[in-house]
Length: 130
Image (cartoon, rainbow, N blue to C red; front, side):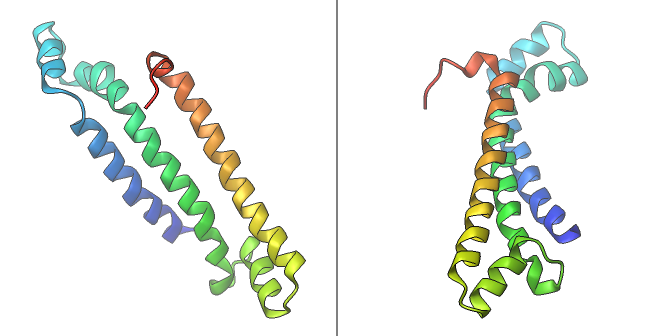
């Protein structure tokens, strides 16, 4: 659990830093000119503008963590990794396919929930298509 959290944390910290770096300097200068202090600038200007990049990092961290949990069987912590390992060892393809499919479905569901959360948190980007 600690290893998964630390791995996800490296992705999250990097995406937070990149998100904050992506805020244009002229926006910061405008907010400072309007009288925003450092705390207000961070909370009301920089974080909302950095949120799409941060959410993208959170999505990557979530999906990669779900994928890495299957490795838990190697260190005797079970989960879907046990089903995959048992399916490989016994050549039971239905078990292997089911466990793999469950892992993919779980990753898709969590990713979709994060996309919905991002759309709710960033209403100004709904009309923008990349």
